[in-house]
Length: 260
Length: 224
Image 1 (cartoon, each protein chain N blue to C red):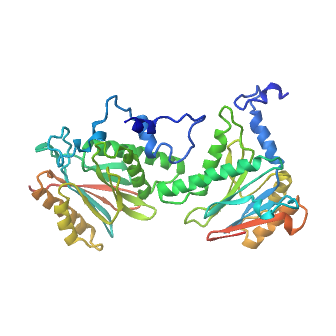
Image 2 (image 1 turned 120 degrees about the horizontal axis):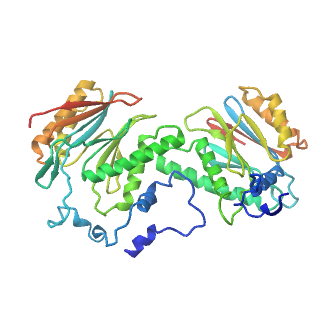
Image 3 (image 1 turned 135 degrees about the horizontal axis):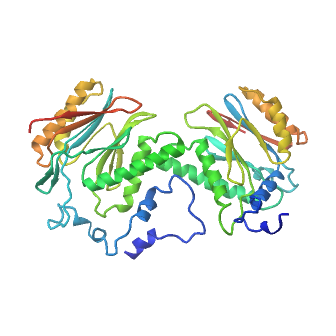
């Protein structure tokens, strides 16, 4: 524990750290602002505190159940999510917003711990805005997802549970990245995250085609979420889908209700 | 007049000057001349090479250095030993920053970003205790990634940076700048840019190829 704390203690330098993009990002900023608890963080010793599978007596039950998906096609990106929040076997809410606007042209989805996702994506939004102000141009999706992954990595194995897709438009077109709290960051054209993701992949993969029309793509996203909510106890509620239809942002919100 | 306000960097004089910074600028003015000119699709840096001592290997006395593979920097040095070292340290920091940026943002730096960074470092050393400012001004030239417009920036020991169409630093920079102002035209071709750089350097440097070093940068290549 000491070694861990020492790692983040202020180094006795004469003057402040160099001004750089990394300042305020990466491993140090979040920890400086985070007040370290006085007691030992249990998860450092025992990473299984929040992992239900390995320790059935785990003390913190985090909301994991969800289905989110996103895929690229010729008209942009479709992002579809369910809206159920469950804590164990209790359904906490049927109307959760699982798509978080990081800023008008970057979306993040929420899977895993709701608080974790919301907090870190808000932080990401802050950094993205600072980048935009400093460099007079929007941050790229690759950079934004990298920032998120770097922010979360120092807390690896400390109990953060977050599986999010960062997606949006930038200079190189539409982009889709998957970032999770284990520190992985992948780029791909299609992702599905959450307990219902396996069900969603089945429908999504069989119907996926880059040349889909916009309406067909929306229908595919909706159908995949529906199938997942049908079979997965932890996903449900209603389907919410977003569509990036242009370089200059515009997220259009479609409300769809599907029979359960 | 300067009196007791010379010593400490972190003390303003009553008429609002930071003397150490101004002396640093003075040191720069004593250094060898360097000229940068922006053309239509290329940018040229010219440096006056001070005469190399007989036993010294001329190839190890470098003034034009690469910061990343798409742009480079020039530092002005002066004969007083020690300030070349300032340049070396600054270049090193800048190179690290370039690579850090590539790592986190997955994109090479823009010229403006790295200029801002170098200027920021130079400014930091004008606002701390126990340190002195860098005694160098730099001319930074290059192209932004995926962009065809050539760029030329200048930083100085106070931490100010600005973009230029053509500029000169070091010895007799005022004369050279006046020459440039008179003869600069928008949209110079490659050859014309080189010619202008050489001619402006010749104003202050003795003629002879041995005394001038030129670097030409175009969007997709870099020739020395």
